[in-house]
Length: 348
Image (tube, rainbow, N blue to C red; front, side):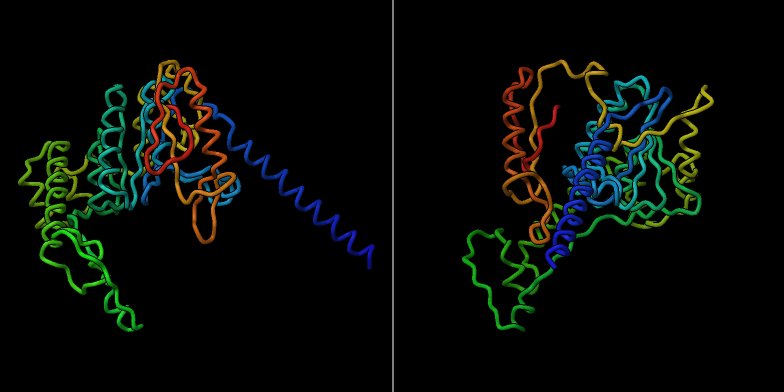
């Protein structure tokens, strides 16, 4: 029996050692700086909420693929504007759920990239209002044959829990101060107050007007016409979208990338997830004084970054301390910015 348990212990040890070595190998593989060929185009896929920062996890990236975050988008567009090997950018937008502040930042990043003189094209399979709002910041917008464009405007909704609490015998109790302090209303009311309706409507009106203004300006259309498209038409086939000046062509994604070929017989593909790992010093943009931005995503814990089944993503205190010291010791760093969320040191 003792011999049996000895063998079990040895097998477990070898298994754990194998997992550890495999992790180190995969981690090193994903940390390797990519090789960028001449005549390349940068491919960026934007979908979902686009987190501010995604902690590096080699196993998760190997099994599920890499997920793009805002920091990688910023880095990729900044580097691509300076990199002679990159001929342009393909921006694939699909079911975007990012907030309007984030979309506005993405539009500004696209505008900054366009100052380089390189082209950035947006491609949609099925475009909703947010998708198209961002896409219009690019040089050209394309939709796949058989796709659709739905400009349905924006809306807001609120879920109230007072009725649910009543079913389980719970009554929420809050001190109310100020006419527009309505955060507790979801627990104490079953409908929106007039003040809350007014605030939400003003926010929606401001965002809606900005969407119309931006689309009209970027597409060279009258604001009244854009308003008509959203309020009275809403749905567009690729053909009707092209006819009304909302897009520049009906092409599959592979056909759009061929535009980058120009006088060359070939064009190479590089993803933003890979491209963001290149050394900026190779592009001559790593020598100036700068501000260190330290990001943080999730609940603060000890040790390194990770994920927890209860708390979700966690920020390791050891990682953050190390990044702060690294930024403080750098002769090029003149200030440290610590926004919410606060996390890993990144050079700007």
